[in-house]
Length: 183
Image 1 (cartoon, rainbow, N blue to C red):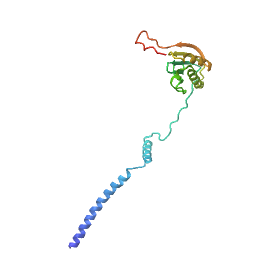
Image 2 (tube, helix red, strand yellow; image 1 turned 90 degrees about the vertical axis):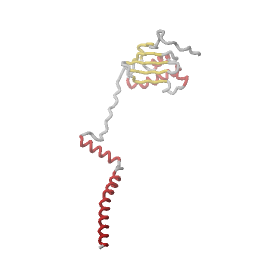
Image 3 (cartoon, rainbow, N blue to C red; image 1 turned 120 degrees about the horizontal axis):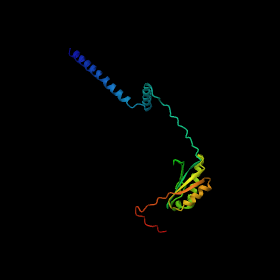
């Protein structure tokens, strides 16, 4: 009987071990399921969206950019000691094209030269041909050497100048002036 008792006890232990094993196997299986395929997760998200009635995976169509035809605009020329910047805008002030000396490959002191100003204007006018710009009112700001050559270049590259206005800011004895340049 002692052997029978031992056998029955062993069977009971095996049953207990077998009952515990499926729990640990289920845990191991769930641990193996966690690193899912990322695409499978996206499919799950798509299925959820389908259930909710949302669009899935349809790419947004981009609208074609409509280029407005503007015959009359403004040209802003900012001519400083260090650089010259030209901006061509519509009558509301929305910029159509712009160009600067640095954008055209000039570096250092060459950026403020009259030659650089004419190249800048040529670049800006070429870009504005798509808009059909023909007539401009010119607003000049600053005291750089590229002011006059930029205005002349606007005329030579096909824009009709209707008016020229100097909008250089002038203080009414506000802050102290900077020291004069030694040239």
